[in-house]
Image (cartoon, rainbow, N blue to C red; front, side, top):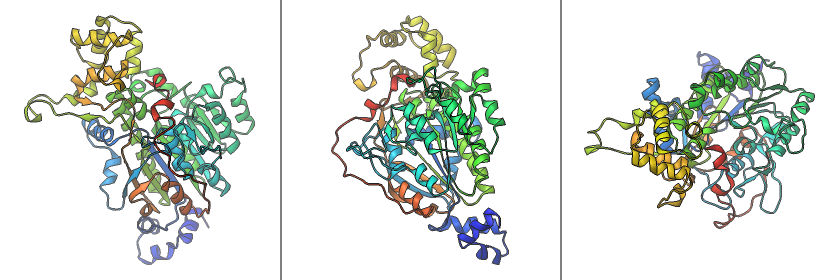
Length: 493
């Protein structure tokens, strides 16, 4: 009996589907989407890291403006068969979570302190989602535009502090994760690891196909586990990727990595795959609206790849969400009655470089004229002399702001370009917003209403018929590390 027929039989759907005269797979999918107890064979957990509702809104506006249609993500939200929920994403010690604690809540069903990966404050190690599913025979994968060892992918596998990337890279090997695709070469390369361990060699010895270029991913054998690291650190912003021919050749997009991961894992009876659009968060930290919306669209293209897969494999559950909001951008009205001036947001499409690339071009201590020149070339904005001089003071570390959370070159660049884009920001850090969850496929009915982030772990295990629970501890008062203190923002923006 083939795997799909076995799935339908197990789910109790085969007879119902065939008795109606409708195609069996179509009927099975329709019934499964309405049944909270339906059994998915494949679970795909999609995370657009740091995507507050404002970022999602502007991503949809940008998609409509540049692609002639809105985001597939929001189109799904309008379908009656797609379940929707609101989720509380707080950490153990704070209303504002970092990505490590947020992913650990999904990954262990237990809230942890900011900066921790599946570790309780008393030192107890939790047993994360991917190892638990592996013991039950499921194949597992992580796909991300950040370093593969970064907080969000690591939350499904590792027990560590988030900064212990070298240890996390080794833990992936010990857990035998079948698909690992993202950035982070430096954590596997003996020349860059602090212990000089050749982790690439260890992965090859264990049978992995090791890839560092986009063409190698396309050629990788499907019968091997995969380790693909396509950048020393994080993968480039989509905005920079699109404007650099070398990057386009060397670095795959999130959608390309997603399709290849699904080609490989789709050969298996059961798999759990996390896909992260991680650089949306980094762009929001930088107050870089052009980079943020471009990466939202890139994430949406990965959603489309998953929907294509789901059409051929109706036993697939898709969960689309984020781990927290970041910096909460909003398009502000301008002009009398918000309409007498040309829409500023259209200027976002003129951007040809991220803030990181702009800062590199400007240099460390530029004159106002240099700032004006680079901004005109990369964004189309002609900064007034006085405002360019004000920004130059921040490059010289002499700037003065009323709100200290905005005291950085990047955030002041975001404030300056808000005059051109119409997009303002609340700050540069994570926010406490509840976030949206969209679920589509067998078992989706479990994901509706108001959820805690820890609920996802328990629902995934229930859908896989795995009986397991990690220990939990009571919530702490606002204490210990804040999200901002554990995330190395300067290295990202």
